[in-house]
Length: 115
Length: 118
Image (cartoon, rainbow over all chains, first blue to last red; front, side):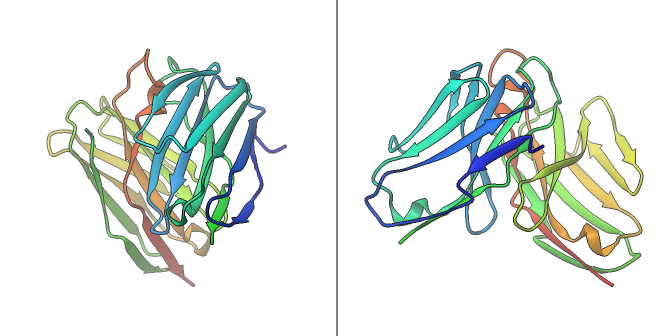
């Protein structure tokens, strides 16, 4: 059983296109996240949702729009893709925000390549 | 905001040797310090964490130490094995119970690529 699953695993697309990445967790967690990992392996948070409500929105271009239809799903839609968007995008989840010190559970990532 | 520096960026050791990775942080209010291991093609996975009310924590071959005064913390892996080869990330956060989760403001170091040679 995969705890945090994201699809697709690989995504190759051209500049200007719009694409989505889907994420689902079966851990019963209340909080979900999107992280971006660049070519140098640097991990940076993009968004965080708690019970479908956006609670963290870092400095990310508004071409990126997260959507959480329910607390088990957090999708990421990217408009007008640019070369600099190429990276690995990780979805993660954790128990609710008041459960301090609980680990993040990461998916295996989606490698996005914009050509 | 918080800034986490991690050193070294790469580390190569012989099997059986010890490996030490060091991190410093800038926000004196940070009080939660997890370490994650990322294997090739996978997402990071928590291996050990420590809170500011504890100076050291061990789990089998892995230990983490924390010096709050100096604002640095370290990961120690003893008797390294080839399967320890991976990228290791330290992170720091200020636990805020009602906003963003304990992980919501987790700031990661830039990672250390550990290679254990058989």
